[in-house]
Image (cartoon, rainbow, N blue to C red; front, side):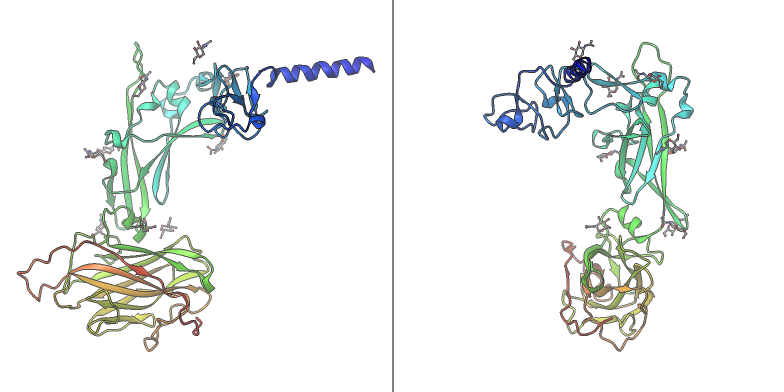
Length: 423
Ligand SMILES: *[C@@H]1O[C@H](CO)[C@@H](O)[C@H](O)[C@H]1NC(C)=O
Ligand SMILES: *[C@@H]1O[C@H](CO)[C@@H](O)[C@H](O)[C@H]1NC(C)=O
Ligand SMILES: *[C@@H]1O[C@H](CO)[C@@H](O)[C@H](O)[C@H]1NC(C)=O
Ligand SMILES: *[C@@H]1O[C@H](CO)[C@@H](O)[C@H](O)[C@H]1NC(C)=O
Ligand SMILES: *[C@@H]1O[C@H](CO)[C@@H](O)[C@H](O)[C@H]1NC(C)=O
Ligand SMILES: *[C@@H]1O[C@H](CO)[C@@H](O)[C@H](O)[C@H]1NC(C)=O
Ligand SMILES: *[C@@H]1O[C@H](CO)[C@@H](O)[C@H](O)[C@H]1NC(C)=O
Ligand SMILES: *[C@@H]1O[C@H](CO)[C@@H](O)[C@H](O)[C@H]1NC(C)=O
Ligand SMILES: *[C@@H]1O[C@H](CO)[C@@H](O)[C@H](O)[C@H]1NC(C)=O
């Protein structure tokens, strides 16, 4: 019985030794200490203290007084050198810094370096194994895009995947951004760039710098064409879900083509007699349950839908043909609505103001009915969006150059002002 007690005591002592006993610093919890930057410091702002609870937010060795290392498991500072944050599975902690364990990569060649590319809705993300790159004698700090200016140096961020340290970086989905090139075929849009990686400097050069092209293909969609265009004519708004549940992101934009893939730019002008295409879409909604429904659209030469010269071209979800001919190409079927607007005429106006009343509609009900006798504006949950399209009436005076007015967009929301009518 006595012997057993002694053994337990020895074990406990050894454990305590390997954790954080033995330093003579004050505990932060006892002196109101905090560790925002650098070593933790007591509330008196001068005494250094050691974290014993959640004080060390960064989890880095910096929290500890010099000569001690942060032990995240036991939440304390120890004199045993540790790496913080902890190393990935293909690294070794040496003298408090993580270094690649090259044994793991022995025999690998450049063919094993398979950069991964994820084509996201807003960014393209490239990922590479840092330790494999290093083993192959490449310097991960030299990763560059085709435009190697300082502004385009990729910001590397690290993740650990399958016990491997991965360096990741993002490319913005914009035409011309840091040398991005855009091409398309009839259904897809391709965004490409070229990645360069230089070798590690050493007396013996045993590798050549590498470059490889990355290309993301996207379905042609209004969203993708807007995201790669520079200054499109676009308005974003929020639209409530069914019965006011939640808010969704609605975008309305004007396009030149029936593919809705070439957005009208703010520097461009629609002239009398040409068509343009009004595209509306909602992102991040459940398209199995909800659809987007446009009830009414009105064009006005001034920022007032009730102006005497304004013209209704969509009513009750369908085209009203009069001064403006329109075709409702898609409405109430998906999260996207498409309206072709053609051949209309306003006198000497620099802009056409397009007002549309739109709402989310329960897909299990009839959302694509067309009833132009209904006025439509008063539905509950209806949102008005207004798009200001640069416009030029050549027939009025072809010699007058219209000064480009500053581009402004306005948007207002009508929420259940008249909620008598249910959809
Ligand atoms: C550990 O790193 C420190 C500074 O980072 C350095 O001064 C020291 O010489 C290194 N010790 C060993 C054994 O490499
Ligand atoms: C490095 O990786 C090899 C192979 O997986 C492994 O056997 C070795 O223990 C690792 N070295 C260290 C110091 O962890
Ligand atoms: C992790 O490794 C397993 C087995 O090697 C592989 O099947 C899996 O795809 C890897 N996961 C990732 C995210 O790379
Ligand atoms: C590279 O990118 C910078 C910053 O975006 C830009 O100013 C520069 O003109 C670009 N260079 C080339 C050759 O495209
Ligand atoms: C690229 O898209 C434009 C606009 O939609 C289209 O006119 C053109 O034909 C497309 N190019 C190819 C090669 O399909
Ligand atoms: C790696 O690249 C960085 C950034 O260009 C440079 O500062 C560093 O000296 C390079 N290291 C080696 C070993 O080539
Ligand atoms: C990479 O892209 C560049 C420019 O877009 C092109 O000239 C080159 O041929 C491409 N290289 C490969 C291997 O596809
Ligand atoms: C792209 O279009 C194809 C065919 O229309 C479709 O099957 C696929 O789901 C679309 N992909 C995305 C990401 O929308
Ligand atoms: C509007 O929304 C689209 C799609 O979410 C986004 O790409 C764009 O940056 C937004 N534009 C503005 C001006 O907020």
